[in-house]
Structure formats: C-alpha cells, structure tokens
Amino acid sequence: QVQLVQSGGGLVQAGDSLRLSCVASGLIFSRNAMGWFRQAPGKERELVAAISWNGGKIMYGDSVKGRFTISRDNDVTTVYLQMDSLKPEDTAVYYCAARSRYYNPTDSTNDYDYWGQGTQVTVSS
Image (cartoon, rainbow, N blue to C red; front, side, top):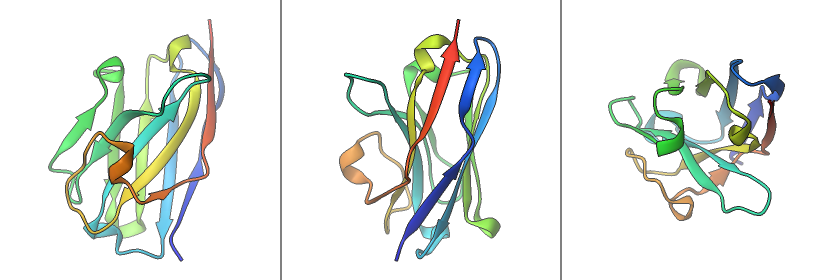
C-alpha cells in the first residue's frame, strides 16, 4: 500500500530554520506531483508548497514565498520542505501529500490522494 512517512519538525524560535522530509513508498514516485500542506488549530488545511514530477513546476502559498523551498529527489522517493526565517504564524501541523497519477501540482487538498501522518512545527516568538 502507499505510505508517506514524514520526519523533521519540532519546536524552534522565530528566525530559525527546519527541514521536513517525506519518504514515499508503494507508488511510482516519479509520476506523482507532491505537495506540503499545513493546518493550524481552528483553520482549514492550506497549501504550503507543491512540486511537479520533475521539479519543473513549483507552487507556493503566498505566506511562505521567499522563505520556504520545496524539492524532491526521485532516486530516493523523497520530497523535502526547507523552511527558513520561520515565524510564529508558521506554527501548524504539516502534511505531505501525493497527487496520484498526475504530473502537475495543484493547490487543492481535494486533488491529493495520499497523505503523510503529519508533523508538528511550533515556532516561538
């Protein structure tokens, strides 16, 4: 079965950096767009970043542009989220997601078929 296993996250101070990783198995990783989403308490899940099968198309949520970087390594079936200049408002549970059988990403949670277990990121001021 498809599994997305996340690692990284934790508690940091404002201005710090973190890197999240998501290792995929059970799917043809190189044929899937991948995304990172986040959900803060009382809020809807929102796009953080998404990347096409070959990295040629990348999308970012407006609040993270210029601070976060998404990348992928198809050889090790892993997608990464590098988060720099973290702010308290970045505090949320972060999820990786796979858009099965589609090469290009979208910003809608409805378009992603598989989800990681979620990882907490907490940024203190």
